[in-house]
Image 1 (tube, rainbow, N blue to C red):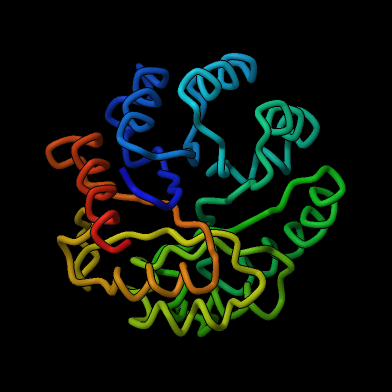
Image 2 (cartoon, rainbow, N blue to C red):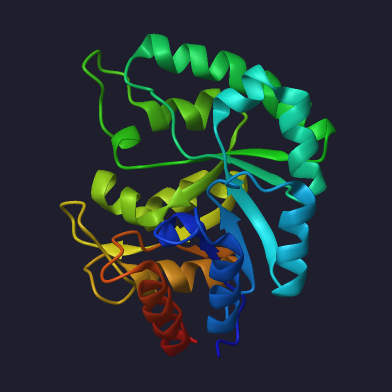
Length: 242
């Protein structure tokens, strides 16, 4: 068992969560994870989600949830997240492929940050590699998220490695807007691997997170041979770093 607490992004286990969320939560808890970051609720009520979390001794660290749900169904969406005890509504990605689309997103996201704060929820954004690369019109999405938006940031350090090569430098720049770190491994070409099996600077990310007391969320999404095996490899690797 690990000494430190870890959450796992449940997209890592998307081979089993849609049909057996309860069983999947039982398995990740048994591996030693103490929290989960949801990637969908698969028709379960808030009461059912709370019951699963309680029975498996898990907390909800956050959720990857659609931005459009906040835009179109704010009250219903916020009520659900409050009911399951979620305080971090994390946007898993949106189309920011032009200046016009960046403008439209920020113009809506900034007021939502304020509105959600009043409801006790922090709005966050999770990056992939594309946000660090210039669009055809020259705009760079992540730069504008940093200097134009109020949104908090969950840095996926693997995709930062793929997109801009130096995730540690990015973590330093994000500063006090950093809520969570996705710790993840893989190759510079974007091919993912479980922790300890790729070439991303996983140990450096781990050391930085520990030094700055930033919560770590594990993600390993290649399902090779399956999600639970990758989740096991990852937490066993983290134990070697402690």
